[in-house]
Length: 227
Ligand code: DX5
Ligand code: ZN
View (cartoon, helix red, strand yellow):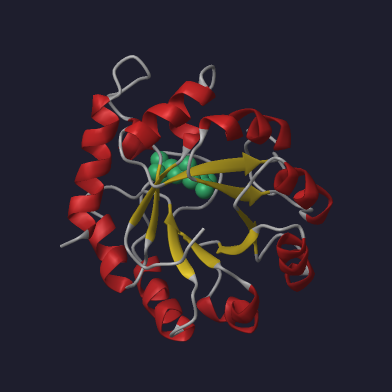
């Protein structure tokens, strides 16, 4: 995985057909997705349950590019090895998931994955200041985590700007997760984000048997972010 700050669109398979993950991953990549974003939820850290390492391992052969695993779970540490062994390229843990995020990030890199740290909307940018030398990605949640299809929280755009300044020349991606569509993408891109996660705005109108809308949706977000 090489580093650059060009805009990358990362469809979240939370909005895919759950009976068809392999084919959905292939379809979004064929339609121009840069990364595949995998939302892991435990019904404890967030009020929803999705899937775990076994599902990640099952979809891995269907993804040519980056598998970006977003852990909305607590505790995190007992599961890091499982997700790394499942082939995750990036593993992101929440700064709110426990008292030892520093140790968690060390463990993620130790397991051979890129380390990401995610911030809920109520958490300030300063909470990751002491972690910047040990992460490859900062994920700014622009909705409260747990569900797709929620409304973008505009107050987070300023946080992206703060983080971008704090990061400086470090090779750290800024990822935006929640409510990204062609209207909100330019706001976060201008503030310094380079990875745009989008669930409902990518999958709407399409399916494995009719994947063209995925491509149109990805193009629309990318074009909006380029302005
Ligand atoms: C929310 C997840 C997001 C979500 C984004 O908890 O982390 O990745 O799927 O979905 P949309 O793009 O529909 O807001
Ligand atoms: Zn996510």
